[in-house]
Image (cartoon, rainbow, N blue to C red; front, top):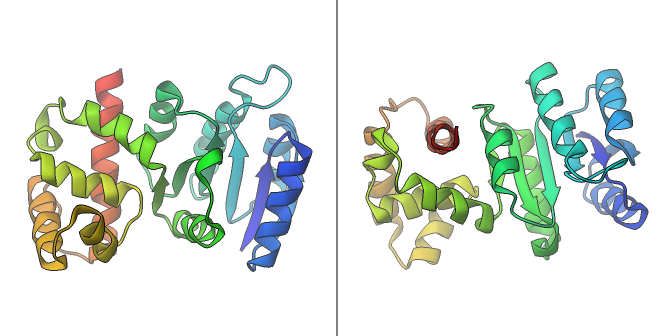
Length: 221
């Protein structure tokens, strides 16, 4: 898998390069500013982009704007955004693209390399990977949303939020102290409430998460 990294801190950038290379990724470029990131993405068309939100010259939202431009110009290229904080506006702007293949992870909470690289692969395959703190902010808003998402029960929202993090049914069951059968029942009710037909569980999981995120983004407009 060919990856481009956008990160202005040299040690973190090189650390990511080394970590990914050790896990079988091919880092085709690692750059320190948003302009270079955009240029390399246009030139190399990687399988995945990983970028910080705050990059030179102002260290505010250059990385986010680059991510949005990449998703607009290259909708087939998955993007994972790394940040030190949950930025509600940044999260909803990124998620408002209403397509799979994206992640929003907090740097300081990436403690398990295996989980991190699994998240990257899931995003590269068209899925989602959201930090639990990001999901918590979105779920609070979704509980007040109108429409299909607003009709979900608190437990169904809990299950859907863990789906947004990319968790399997077994992991969701363990986190919520439920049986896997109960989780399957909850996901079935979620699919029904969101009007998702039976056409492959993995595909429906992504669609359910996208409907959830789209409803939250709509509430922020």
